[in-house]
Structure formats: structure tokens, C-alpha cells
Image 1 (tube, rainbow, N blue to C red):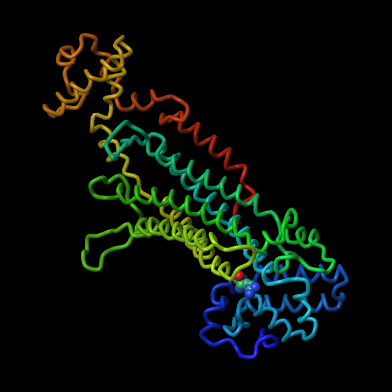
Image 2 (spheres, rainbow, N blue to C red):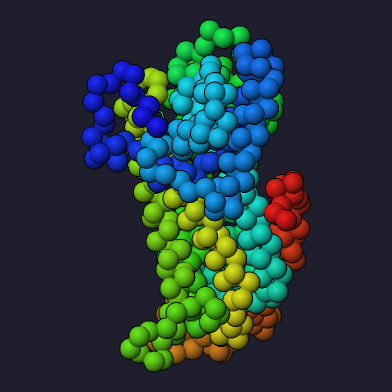
Length: 464
Ligand code: ARG
């Protein structure tokens, strides 16, 4: 379709057409575009701007186009500037005159704003569904490891004992917040830009409430200039994905470290690993490494879309056409990342013995030794210095805290007694941390229950 033949003497240069065209990317909006156009046509008929017959022709023509795209019969043509012009052109080819009336009281600016919003809403809902599946996997893994003691780290140095359940549930909390952020972002996507026209609505007596409701929105947008230039929903969706992907990346980093020979805590299933082309012994955590890389990519998309928008004046500018590169790339990479992560976590092998053995090392119970002295009446800071000196003695003599004799302890402080050894026992140390949000098996079970309750609020987003 030579769209500009009325105004222009010369055709767009081939390279300029290629530069200007977005169909190679925005063809992915075809479903949303057809859905929006059908509702627009029905509104035009209802408002007596086109006839009922024309509306019927348009709607059935659009249905036919949708069917032919989905069956592969109709191929997208790069002659069209974008998906909107492609569908309109195809419609007119199929139904004639009525097709030329579809664009009455509409601009591509409100059309594309609508399509992008519908896409973002759809994908955001799907993202919540995928995250709910991941949560289920994480929670199951936690339930299997309520008593799997492992070292907890700060600065990647052994700190205090935790369980693998507690460690995994930390990620479940991050993902729960991601779900809430997506859902919160959705609540701000609830206004329909259709009817805003190019920027200043239209002189036709259109019914924006009707189109908004028919398309599943709460209401029409309130300012037509904002409507065609607003891409906040794109930014919010990508920013939520960027944060969520950062969480996945941290988890992936732990999978990589914990599955190294030095740690030996975890084994990633063959199904989610790769080998080496030269080193026959290798099993590499490629998927986890790619998950780290995807976080970088989505973060780059966020920076891209924010930078793209930051100096565009009102209202629509062609810069906005590029929003789709960032948006589609983010959702596509986010979706596959969540699916891979769910697969990896559900097939993960946990080496409980190795975790337990390592939890016995690094004077992990030193805080508890100091607390023992406090309970015997010492001030914490004094207890802390004494225990530090005992740890030093242990390191010099290659003894753990439970291997040092009571006589030796008594030289450090008279208050040490037989009951001390039980007090620094690993299981005891862990399960004594019976504080809300703590690592004891009881408290983690409680954490799981409360998390499941929170997740239940989002059950309407579950994928079938
Ligand atoms: N393809 C454009 C986009 O994706 C929509 C077209 C609006 N173009 C225009 N010249 N007003 O943003």
C-alpha cells in the first residue's frame, strides 16, 4: 500500500522504508491489533459512523485474517510499514470499500498505544502465572529440606547454621515480591488509550467507555496527549522483570558456586547442564550462567527504554516505535528464564551430608558459645572476646569448639560447664533460633505456610 501517495511526489527511498518499517518486529502484535480493530469497528457502527453491514464485513474480514495468520496461510509482508498498515491493507484487499472505513476516528498512534498495552497486560499476567509455578517448585524443595543443615554465609565466609529450606525460602520471598510488583503494575494498566486519536481525539461522536469496557479495561484514559505518548506500563513491566531477573541471577550464582567441586552442596541435573567439547570430565552449569546473563540483558532493555523516552516531547514521536524491541525481548527472555529455572530447581540434587559436614566447620557455633557465657552472667562483649580467644586456640591446635576439653575452657572462663557441649551442638544451635523469620525447622514451616497463604491471593493468575 502506497500510504503517502496523496501528499508525496516521490516514493520513500527503499533504505528509508526499511529504516522506518517496524513490521519485522511488531508483527507479534497481530492478535491485539485485530482485537482492538474489531471493537473499534463495533463502536463505529454503534455510534452510526459506519453501517451495521460494514461492521459485519470488517469483523468477519478481520476474523479471516486472524485465522489465516495463525494457520500460516497469510504471511507478513515487508512492503507494509507496520503491522497496523499490513492488516488494514489486507482487510481492504479482502472486503473492499468497508475496509477503507476502519481507520475512521482513529490514528495509528492510539492504535499502537492500545496494542502495546494489551500485549503488556497479557504478558504480565502470564509472567505472574510462571512465577507462581516457580514458587511451587521452590516451596516443594524447601519442604524436602526443612532439616538439611548447611552453613549460612556472610561475606561468603561461614557465619551461622541455617537449613537449605531457609536458604531457598529467601528466594521464595523475592519471587513473592516480584509477583506483587507485577500485579501492582497491572493495576495501573487499566485505562484504555483507544479514542485518543493522533493526540487530540476526534470530532466524531465516539464512545470511549464502550471500547474501554469491551477491551477489558476499567475506563478510558483521561488525557489524549498522555494516552499516545505514555509508555509507563512498558517501563514498569521491564523494570519488574529486571528486578526479578536479578533475583534469578543471584540464585543462579548460588547454584554455580554450590555445585562446584569445592562446595559440592548441589548437583544440577544433566537435563539442565552442558559438557565440554574437549574436557571429558566436565559438567558445566551453562543454564545457570545464562540466567545471570539474561539479567544483564533485561537490565539493558530497561536502560534502553528509559533513555529512549527521556527527551521525547509530547505527544507521539517515532522514537516510541522502538519500545517494542525492548518490551518483546524482555518478556521473551524472562519467560524462558523462569521456565528453565523452574526445571532446574525441580530436578536439583541436594547433597545433605556434604552440607552438614561443612556446617560443622568454620567455628559456626562461636556466637552460641558467646551466648552461653552471657546466659551464665557475662556481658556480651566480654563473652565475645573470650570466645574469640578460644577460637584462636582451636585454630592453632586444629580443634573444633566441641573438641576442646572442658579443662581448657575453664582456663578461659570458670563458668564453662558440662552443659556447654550440648549448647553448641549443631542441631541445638539451629533449632534454638526459634524466632519469627528464623531458620529453625518449626519457623521455616511457619514461613512456608504464610508464604503459601500470600500466594493464594494470586491464584486467579494460575496457568492451565
Ligand atoms: N509503527 C508505529 C509504532 O510502532 C506506529 C505508527 C505511528 N506512526 C506515525 N507515523 N504516526 O509506534
